[in-house]
Image 1 (cartoon, helix red, strand yellow):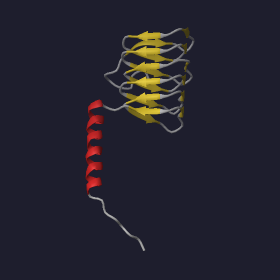
Image 2 (tube, rainbow, N blue to C red):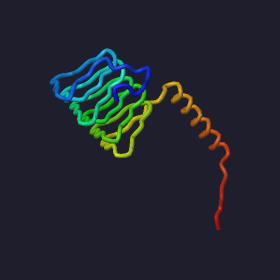
Image 3 (cartoon, rainbow, N blue to C red):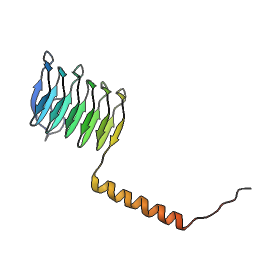
Image 4 (tube, rainbow, N blue to C red):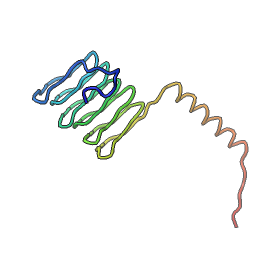
Length: 141
């Protein structure tokens, strides 16, 4: 779990015997085995190991959650809720992967790319306009 991708490097680790009371801010990525009673904010990725516990919000570019999180998760890119994950809180992310066995209680908001969302909205509006112009009636007897 320390390195899932060849380009992602963990710059900080919270060990299994460590309990932090307060917010954690990391420049880079963090791997959490212990317990944090506060929010976690990282410029890179946040990874939580099985048995870890976070009582607070998470903000980062990417996240792989295997532990227990009681709080909202706001991720810029990709979030993976792994099989041992328990997330009680809302999730906002561009990409969401939920593995079989993960527990997620909250709302999910997939933000996507702003440019893509705007293009999709325009396509939907164009489709609605053309559908309104070509209304047909169908009688079923």
